[in-house]
Length: 306
Image 1 (cartoon, rainbow, N blue to C red):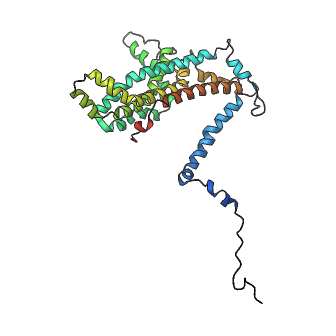
Image 2 (image 1 turned 90 degrees about the horizontal axis):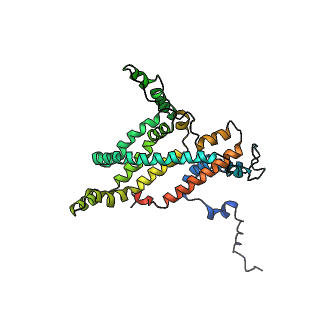
Image 3 (image 1 turned 90 degrees about the vertical axis):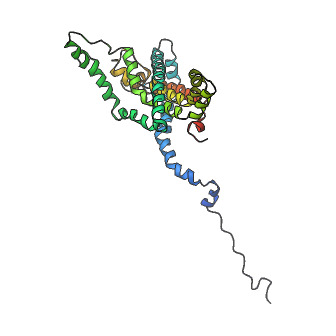
């Protein structure tokens, strides 16, 4: 006697989902997969060193017990009133601020002239100012030393006429001059880009309505170009805080900047935890400043997305 299931094949049992099926919902998009190599590179080259420095800052002083000890002695030493490291920090901030102010005053007219003469090609022409970066900074700074040093190019030339060259090396103003010279491209290019975003029609309309040149600059050009100016000043300030070659080569270590203190802690003193704690404080300072500046910027407008 046939059963009711005769001629009807039994329904196949569904196999247990594999681990690939389980994680199918978490599959990366095409964009995420393309960005994965960059994320890995940033993780290894940027995040991992930061984590190591942060961990070292809590290690036992003058040891390499990273991830094996935890102490606040390094930070306590930095905040000790007898510690002169804050004087180095103030020197670095002072040099960076002065460099930003001087370069903003110097680079703005240059960027304005580039935009007036070359128009939309001003950003391309301003790249010419980047060419000195192809030469090592130390080589360029030692060229300054050879020019200004006693019996150097300037002094030797003036002696032919019975004069002597000025003694400007190994003094704070010379350090500042070297920083202004070194970081000019980093200020000029963002300002040029910012001024290129100012619509010429707005300026012409304001002039037609009777606005003076000063009013046009104050009410139209400066506010619209401010994102580029702020980015240039931020970039210059961050680079200025970390500058060390100018102080060592042009200043002859007459002034000790914060980057030099960090270098000494990691090299001559062999106190990696103290150098790490100092690096963490400098990084936090720069990070807070950067976030504060970018919170005031509309990057979409600056990049021309709308």
